Length: 278
Ligand SMILES: [Zn+2]
Image: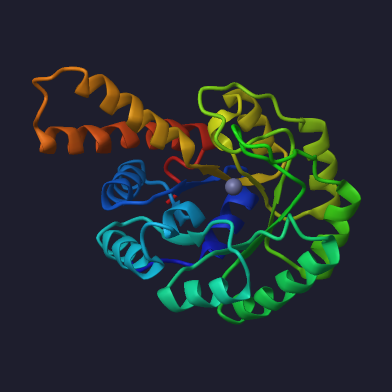
């Protein structure tokens, strides 16, 4: 079916106590893996593309591929812009057919973050598309970015001032924490959730303890982002296959990559509780 607005997916997840998996993609194999696995599990899904991917592949190419694969699937698929950089990129994404937006102004001071978020919100709301914003500092494993939990007072103020549809928060979750079992601050999440009342988004889903993810979903998390996990699992898979010098079947490797991604998507959809919710 045609891409659907992410608003519908988020609201249904928020109302019914599960989370939408938002899987980053950057090549056709990953797009097919995510959408076909979600279809097999009768789960709604978000496919997202981020800034690292745009350095290699143009947004319009990615959007065209996602639209084409989604059109053959019988489940609702939304295409989400991850960590959008500002108004211009939001408009570019809308023109390419994205159905869910994020603006990440978490590095700006809060008033500047509010001001840009508000501008994009006018555009997204006019088109019935949801806008996600971010507060706090998540950090990325392996970089020297600082980490800072989202301030609940700021979150409440920001949500009121911008009327955003969802908020990405920092609770001890970190981007690119592959193979880690991080605990997140669930008490802090509860406080923020009570104050903002809108769907919360958990970035860095790769490195968070599965048990904590389940609890977080009961405390208002309605979207969980997964990116690093399949990328690193793909590298692990290739490393092991290529250690065998007789392995020179590209098609087999390509399918192996797809199956590696499918396995991860399957596990996450079960964990997030979106199985059968399409
Ligand atoms: Zn993120």
